[in-house]
Length: 187
Image (cartoon, rainbow, N blue to C red; front, top):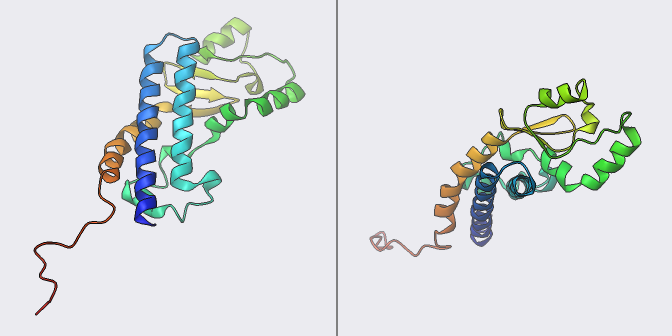
């Protein structure tokens, strides 16, 4: 990978890690409501942007981005690689169309916080997965959408781990000059 491109990616990754960590801090200090979900959405956007930077959209650039991942010590097993939850949020319009066409009960559960069993008690049973849009279980740290579960703590931990590495790498000069202790002649 060209050094200029590598530094540009490292700089962007530093920024997305920063944004994701800020979003998580904001969300965890807010009571359930608009500001909380604003933080959750921004965390997912940052995580999705990191995934695209490391592997490309849909993983199509995984081979090309190997030097980037290596420079920041990111493994293919990184929790940042998963984009399902971000895709749910980004394509909510499509999810609503599918829900309308396929839900049998047409219950619409969205922006809920707490253990799912508490909502099930209120409803007289567990809701159909298709009826549960954005749900965060604050006792487990798991975000859910249509039955897909996304553990946030491993994502946040990975952002926090990568952040200082990206800061250090992004601040390195593109080209280092010759070593002043090297006589260069070999004579």
